[in-house]
Image 1 (cartoon, rainbow, N blue to C red):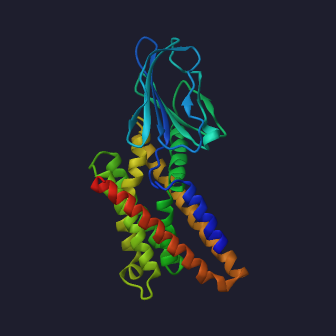
Image 2: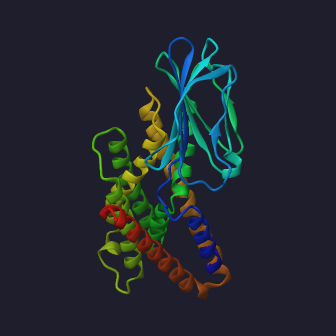
Image 3: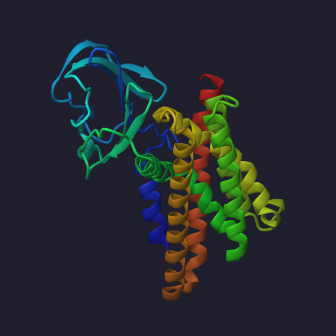
Length: 327
């Protein structure tokens, strides 16, 4: 189990010390009059390769105007105005270079001039796709489910919090209730922030998310279990409200398709839950398999996981706390 825990640590660390600062790439096209198309490219500041990710100029289009890349939030943003053949980009392939080298994915959104929109996700397996004449609800559903699942797996702070819940809660039924409460909590704030019901100080919420993991690690490690262990569902739902704001921050970086906001929001949330369930299933399966092989090593492996949680959370608290203070 120690090897399993260390392997999970390596995966989480490779996702970046910045942890939750996941800003997926997105490429948006908007049809305008006179066969012109506005192209907007957003990509993270941090990449895993020296090879840049960039959109390919669609066939039959020439650049009329372009802007220099500027830093906005956690990524670079660049804009172009394209003069394309009549009919916009319908029937033409949209592609992004550098996705395989960076092991990355990007959301592509195409806004038709009649208010409709179409979206897809390009990744290492699918680096281009043809714009259809009409969008489908299935495209929204699939694209945002993929983005939600990728977000939870690209955010080691969220995974560590879920790991803490697994270590804290005794019994499958109690774990199910606790995880469901966490889901309910982050679903509420994810929807409210995304729909513009309220705004929040990003740096402070990022700090509180890290603090929630540190507090949970302390509770899991405590010799005498306290209120957290007695009412894990309440703790999970409360901290879920914080994590939901973090999820909303990532979704705002990508954007939502006009006219299909509820479906996109639901799909993104479903993707998060599927990724979360997959992670819990992985932990439980590995733990059960290890106990059959070496039952006496379980306490040692649990201790390694707890101290790793606490150490990473403490580091994030310091880093994000300095941002809150403006240091």
